[in-house]
Length: 75
Image (cartoon, rainbow, N blue to C red):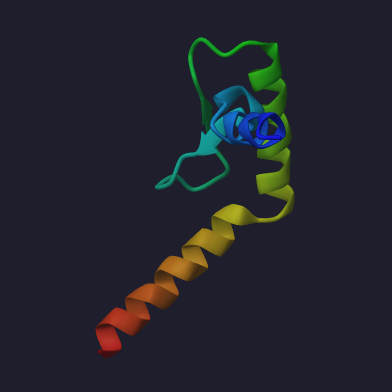
């Protein structure tokens, strides 16, 4: 009964399922992956990078930070 839920939880923490993470503070889409990544993690990093680029994640983050700064300044 719990084995399915435990597998889901394990998969949520498996870095190879996510591949990499975006690096903030650069002007462009940059995704960093673990140095010892296997082929599955490399594949997932590439797919995640494509998704970030297609969905303009960098611009969304920049806009959110600017909005937050405006809220902080106006308070």
